[in-house]
Length: 93
Image 1 (cartoon, helix red, strand yellow):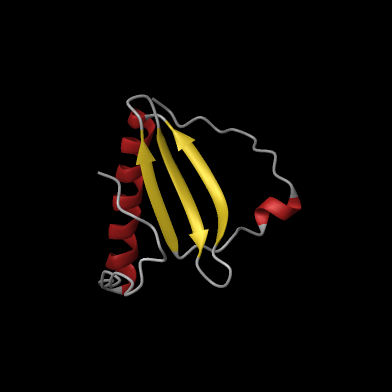
Image 2: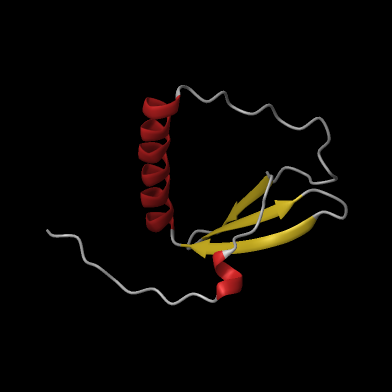
């Protein structure tokens, strides 16, 4: 199957991107919710992405493949340590 080229419309504002140093993941049976947060004062939700479990699994695979390519080129990346402060967020059970 040949890759399909698609045209994507984007506003200039969206092309700048947003910074996030925290992600909170929650889910139902039907979808995953990824909340990206900038923890600088005050902590702010910068983006929320909703997707199906199947799409999330493809995204995880793409991220793993790209991290491997990055490390092959630039060397191993150490996993960031968990923050000392939990910012008042409680883990979901």
